Image (cartoon, rainbow, N blue to C red; front, top):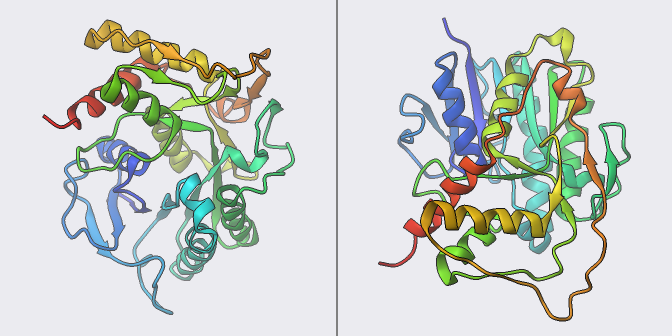
Length: 315
């Protein structure tokens, strides 16, 4: 009999990809929480849908009854979190605590919480490991820290895994999924909409861009990893190397030319100060030491994201 995993955010950008990847393994029964969707998505056609509102939640529920693992992915994206701090804290903080309490009540074995690399600071630079201090004051980061602390506090009751994800990007698994307001989505949408990539800065700032496919694979790896290899349950998830925003924009432009035949110039503000790129080493050595390996699927994700952006343009 297959174990059962319950996911929040399984209809979203990253969540959809993670749900699809779990479904493709055929090793798990899947339950998806949704406020409004009543039917299973095409990327997980056999999933059970549980109608549940994480914000206006009841005092008591049985959502974790019969569940072996929980993956909590639902969260506001960074700009939305800045504009609505209370809602960000509710979804990533209080809702996480609620789910953990429900999970422990029904003896759930493992709880995975999707956190963010941005807890390490408002600007990421230098070498960052899981031992680096968390200094960010941005509501997107601080709301996720509330969820992390809730999981730490329950360490004696459930096996908790905190995933600090770098700048995830990739194509949506379904055409109905909204493209969130992220840097990579913006770059690809500019190609599709105007044929010009306009940067808001010099582009020399470093980022660790990680393909959605690798985030999904890492999530499944940690979901199924033997507990003896989990340590304290905290893992950075990212790519093995970082690059500048400009370098990624150039790669997007190159894929647009090679795959779609679109020549796309890159424009930087005339007033932008051109500085030497900062070094960013977002270490995933701890994850790699457990036997995980990255896929180098950057081109595939960019191509798929560009295709999705082109398909969404008015005919």
